[in-house]
Amino acid sequence: MKLYSTFSEFRADLQSGKVTCEGYVTDLLKEIKNQQDLNCYLETFDESALDQARKADAKLKAGQAGKLAGMVIAIKDVINIKGKKVSCASKILENFTSVYHATVIEKLLAEDAILIGRTNMDEFAMGSSNENSAFGPVRNPVDKTRVPGGSSGGSAVAVAAKLAMTSLGSDTGGSIRFPAALCGVTGMKPTYGRVSRYGLVAYASSFDQIGPFANSVSDLALVMEVISGHDEKDSTSSPKPVEPFGQGLGNSISSLKFGIPKQYLGDGLQPEVREKLTAAAGYLKSLGCQVTEVELPHTEYCIATYYILTTAEASSNLARYDGVRYSFRSKDPVTLNDMYVRSRSEGFGAEVKRRIMLGTYVLSAGYYDAYYTKAQKVRRLIREDFTKAFDQVDVLLTPTSPSPAFKIGEKTTNPLEMYLSDIYTVSANLAGIPGISVPAGTASDGLPVGVQLLGKHFDEQTLLNAAYHIEKANLK
Ligand code: GLN
Image (tube, rainbow, N blue to C red; front, side, top):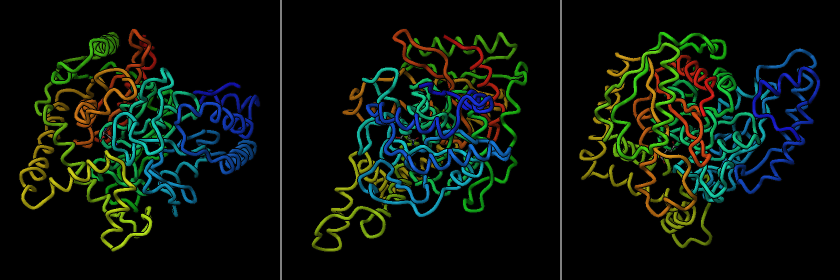
């Protein structure tokens, strides 16, 4: 069967009558089963997806179709879809069924999208390799012995393997951009507040954002346009108007100034990734853009600050899984306390427990000021670094990941080394700014490499357009 990598291509074939949504979804569901070894889907929504496909066909025929009619979308298993399970790839929520739609789901369905299934991920979105899922690791389709990146690995793989046209992930410290880079697709973390978090299971609430993956920047822009905007159910969502992002693609970017942060070119960066970054910069220069070096002086504190603040928030957010309300309950507990302890001990995986312990420690009475308060102050300094950089340039160009995809099992015994993978991505979440990862060719072993663009708050349009140009360059 022909697998469609982009929605625009599928839409053209729909219009010429070559395919129908129903026919394609029927075949795709079979193909997903054939490719189960990737482990990117935890569940496919066979019945409801076919139902949505039939409705999309009818609406297209009647000329009443929404913007996304026929778009097959996969959803990270951390976003609530009414009537479907939402497990966050954790044993503790394995049998929990969602009772309401997240706002992003309402918006996708209002535009006639087809929700094909829920994707595997690191448990509660904690991880960089997708090896922390209670339901097994996800494999990188380019080389199945390697990780796809995390935590939204399933969503990245579904798109890379053409088992969905687009997907949604969540990004707290790089979980969209990092797997996008490792799998050779594009992925965007919007500005904090751009997309409603209502219905997204919380990891670290002041960092989390939902965002899309796609095989083309124009598909990415289209999904962004649909999911963005103010939501009265999320008080941190912004009332700023949403531009028609797709229409702004292709405008000249020759007047844009790009900055490469000096601190991002240090030791840990693999030479081949650096070469791709240089090639992308060279291409931008050839378009007439200025590319200069800029300073982000507090970069060395980003990882520590990120892991203090996110574990603190996580330890508080995850307190709700106590075995009493909607989570797994251990069998035959003796006392109330025993029930709490055993339910949480048996329900959570090792990485989640590690973070709850770290988080409760940094929030404990004797250490609160030394760690939590201090980290909040450093977060402010990191944010100011970006404000100053954006006084000089419009967009920052950086690597997304220090290296291409690593082997499954390579970093699992050393959590600190795993945390260092996030070095180029966590800063955007600390500062609340938008970021996008766009493919920039492959390394000598054929593994994809991505570059990251970071922009001013709410300047998604400029980022998408710059990414569109880099995509057109077709860097090798
Ligand atoms: N790898 C980072 C972490 O484990 C980022 C995760 C994310 O963005 N959800 O916290």
